[in-house]
Length: 379
Image (cartoon, rainbow, N blue to C red):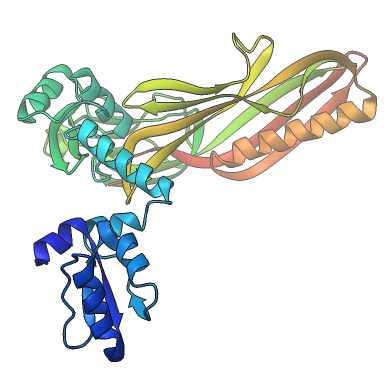
């Protein structure tokens, strides 16, 4: 039996004891079987005749090894249908999706929003599920011609993933008009600190400014040499805010039951297929509570396949009338939320929350003062 024959059709290596070798050879000769037993007592049985030879050698003490060769390896999986199906699906998926874009990843070093880059590529016909073009320069050229925000883009293919390098067009720093080069205030405030790195300060500590007033100018006076530069610096201001909220004593609320899965779908190359739906038509009076999408990965590579789920719940609207204690509790909760919003804006230096309870409801007034950057180039 040649090595190639063994590899393709599969075989089992068997061993017979020395005192039974002659008997085994006689059985082979009587039944017209051409098998050779070597000096160590090993012989190789073709996989397709294994059952017949096992029955013939049943009276003898024979040791049989594991199936080997190509068909021998596959025979071990004959009861593992899930593995076979997975292999077949993997091969089919590879054939069907060869050359397709599985994922688009924008480099973190890019100074443009990744969503804007992906949207511009999609407008040019390059998206997840599309085929990789033979020449990506045509796509890059079309993106740059159609986009008013990109000055450079490069598509680099690595397997089925497109890696994107992009740069935006140069614009003046935030708060600096294109003409005049002036840093202006974002809010009404009282100046607390001024730090000029480049340019001329137009405000001083203690001065009150309005949103849009010039803080630092890049226009150099003639007595200082003249000309213009891009200003840079930081200006801190004290900002005062007031928030008013009125809560009604009688109101309507919407209460939701426990959310339930309404729809499950699979997205393949941008095509959606519903695989589970609770209702034949629309969900009726149900409200969509959450949308979930789970991407599928194979060996760490994101496939152009995702599973989406929509959860819904029925909302019931009812009228409620709050007691004085309940209104006070609601007002305290609103104050807490307002404090959190203002604290996120800057360093709070003063805050007060007043309530006024009446027959129709309760009024809440929150006054706060906080320090924040009015405008900074961050150089």
